[in-house]
Length: 313
Ligand code: SF4
Ligand code: MG
Image 1 (cartoon, rainbow, N blue to C red):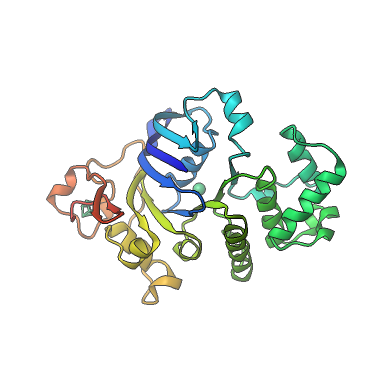
Image 2 (image 1 turned 90 degrees about the vertical axis):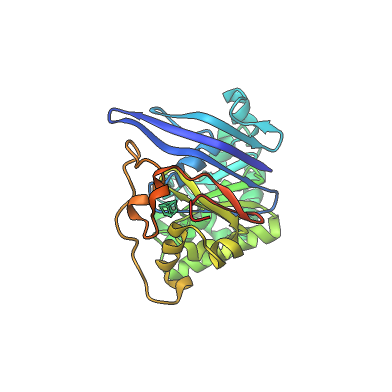
């Protein structure tokens, strides 16, 4: 199980301290899938990078706790984390990763190099066997192994990248915007490949996307983030079926597949995180804002397992 408690990731920029993730808590049980939603810049990817312990200066994890199974991820030494946790226990498909495959490597070379990088390479035959098995799991055929990235379609590249993330047999896989920049048909293929992995391998997925439609297909529960804060958290049916936070409500109305009704934009834009609004960070854009919103709302369990940070509740 992954347990994140009051995570804070700040960037120390010349403009001041940017509080990219500012007190976020959630958990992911074995075999469970969590979707993290919100506009770009809300801290979704930073949260994921923190789970992988890949935050680079001027960024810093300044507070909170990340427990990944038996590992206290933030207090353990870096080399132990690298050896025992990163990629082996939790791995990640980075945003845009399919465009960073090495052009002079075949697909098979990518598998070999990844194994070598983790001291897991034994023989070519064994690597081949592993690669074929993983490619099959994401719906690709063996022939793909000898191809170069430029000979693959976008959907094939994305599936190769997912297969690579599974190479060290992780229990938890983070996928950051895995369907963004793909056309609708290919998106559906990737969604199905991920669904298959959840069902057949029992993998826990942490899915990051601004697309609530994609989340609704793959997540058991949802965390909605706004401007570095968690604003709503709970089981999929509750968060999307009965959204309580005004931001979640607007986000849903901006999602064609789900809302069904007239599409709406969320007016305004997210705040500057070096200088966020006092009180509720959504206040400048919130149609329901009132006096009390000048104070910061805390996460509250409004109904069983359904958490909301808003003074309306
Ligand atoms: Fe809107 Fe106030 Fe709720 Fe913030 S706390 S979302 S401003 S109603
Ligand atoms: Mg991102």
